[in-house]
Each structure stands twice: as C-alpha cells, then as structure tokens.
Length: 161
Image 1 (spheres, one colour):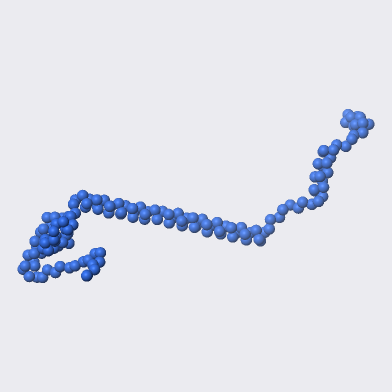
Image 2 (image 1 turned 120 degrees about the horizontal axis):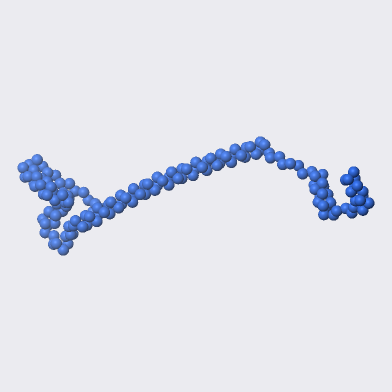
C-alpha cells in the first residue's frame, strides 16, 4: 500500500481551454466570497463529494472558533519567540559585560603581580635591640624600683631651689 508523508502537495493544472478557464473563474469567484477558505480546502471538499465519502468519515470543517483559537495560538507563539529573543539579547549583553569585567580584573591582577615581583614590599626591620627596649620598658612599668627615702626628700628641695 502507498505510504503518504505527513504533508503532500499535489498540483492542479488549468489549460488554456474554455472549459478550464471558466472553471478557474468560478473557483476564483467562489474563493472571493469565502475569504476564510483556500483553494486547497475547496479541492478537498470537491474530492469528498466526488468520491462519495460518507459524512461520518469526512473531517469536520474548520469553524470560526477554531480559526480564532489557531490565530491566538500563532499570536502567542510569536510573542513567546519575541520574548525569548529579547531575553537572549539581554542575557547576551550581560554575559559580554561580565566577560569584559573578568578581562579587566585579570589584566589588573597581572599588572599587580609584575609590580610586586619588580618592587618587593619592604617592611620595617624589627631588630633585637628595639625588642629588648620594649621588653625593658614593660618590665620597669610593672616592677617599680624602690626609691631611697633620703633621695626623695632631697628631690623636694631641688625642685624648690
């Protein structure tokens, strides 16, 4: 048995004879009166009638409601596609900005690495002498020396003198 693809396109040829030209004129006139119908729809209806197929097997014609629903679906699909395109563009710009920032940071890090290797950071030396001075001052503050009472009395006279 012959297997048809999902969508089959067949052509109809109208010859330049009087009969074909008059038939084509009738078809065009009929299609002008029914703008929602196509030539394909008209051919299918004629084939259903010509082949005497029972109406139970014949598919129901499209109604205005189904056309309206299909139009709304098409409109929604276009809106979704438009939204996806805008989101893709926006996210693409954001990604490019992030990539530029990462490149700038990488360049700054490389520059800092060069500066650090060429000019090492010099910290003030901590010599053992300064550490000893701090330790002695701390010890002296926490352990006051005993003062001679005679020197303490004489210091009062020296201040007055």
